[in-house]
Length: 273
Image (cartoon, rainbow, N blue to C red; front, side, top):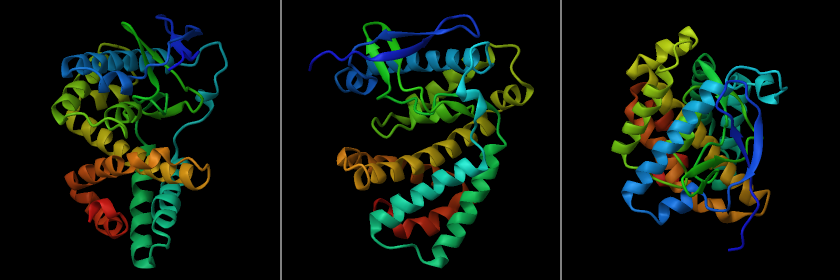
């Protein structure tokens, strides 16, 4: 493979520091993990977590440099647009027929409740696509690309993007360790907003938010993969749909309050049969 000049946005150490562009090569974290032993995979993911902590701590406060990310955030309308995107492509287009009203109404009610709950959670600067194909491995360095969709989002959104990836299935024990590492790193910052600090000191609440943001993000991704195939003519992402939807089902199974959503979605998702 020829070397690709990849522009990477990489933060200085001081809060509010400027960004610079640098070539980080053409080896993604996903590629590096496929060719590495478990110990190396764990090291790379620890590095990705540490970098995410720095991103969230340093970039969550507006600087003197204008940034579009601070002018938009995950709110109820955006969450509902993404849920509807999944419904339109992940269900209707994929199955070739609409959901019946007996299924659509309760599903949308559950989506609405989840959107309202997620929108009320603490927010940080969110890359929005922080996953194994947007992290570049260059020797001992880890670079980040594709910041164009960044906004203010739930503190767990990027974490869920990384650990509930559509392209790499991590062991649950490793996911648990990496979540703990993220929380520990974030808690070292003494001046966090009160709501964020309280969440980081409540393991049950933090894990619930992680799982719920994973559900929302994975549903949106599954719909997006079908959209890219049907509208953009690129079927390469379709192979990632089963893992993405199985991530969703695993999380839905854990919470009794989400079983209504699981019940009414299941007839329309072949992977859940």
